[in-house]
Image 1 (spheres, helix red, strand yellow):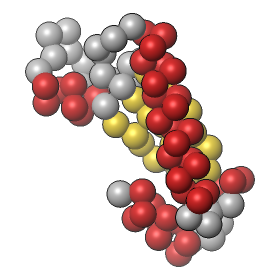
Image 2 (image 1 turned 30 degrees about the vertical axis):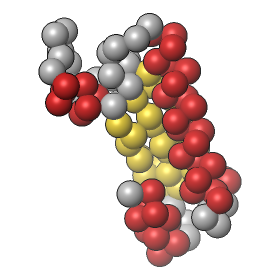
Image 3 (image 1 turned 60 degrees about the vertical axis):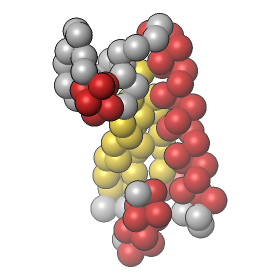
Image 4 (image 1 turned 120 degrees about the vertical axis):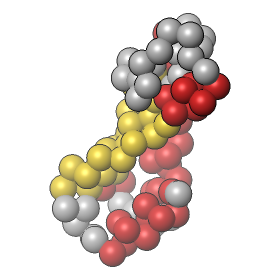
Length: 92
């Protein structure tokens, strides 16, 4: 999926992206925040390694603060949906 993002960013050389990584609700809040931040930074590093300029992508970890599926007794599927990365177009 990241290679698809690289392809789109190459097609639109002025596009700027913000990558937000999320975790499920398992684990401590602080751990999940650090985990998602590492995922976001890894995503940015990968995109940059494919030739995209550093000033065109930022990333941040959101931990479990913004679940896609709010649940208390989450199923495996709900946990999987909450573990995700989102890519927001900041500039076209």
